[in-house]
Amino acid sequence: MSTAFDMQERSPSMMHIHRAGTGIVAAPDDIASGSFLVQMLLSSRTEAEMTAMRAFEPPGVVTHWHGESPACPFSYLSVQPVKNGTAVAWFGPVNQKGFQQ
Image 1 (cartoon, one colour):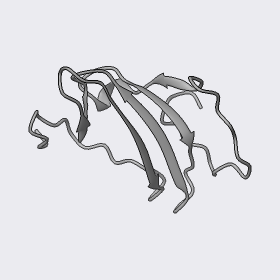
Image 2: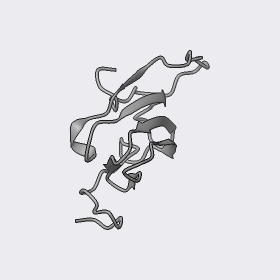
Image 3: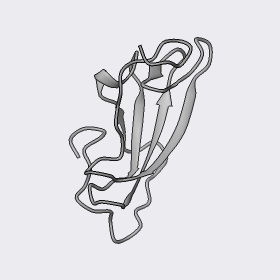
């Protein structure tokens, strides 16, 4: 995969074990108020297969509907099925109250 969100055609048929700290890359610039890191754990573009990603956000970074306070880092695990060839539909930026701008 060349970027964090490039998806494989299908989920792997065998389990892959990732060593701690491996496969962590910068997320695309246009989906958050600042830089953050992601680790793809499971990817696919096949309808109804599952994807999984772990995100690591520094204090104050807000993605389009996820984010943290100015003083605390934030980490989350995102698991979702593929629909229409993608697992995530990124909308516009949000303000501090969590509403789309």
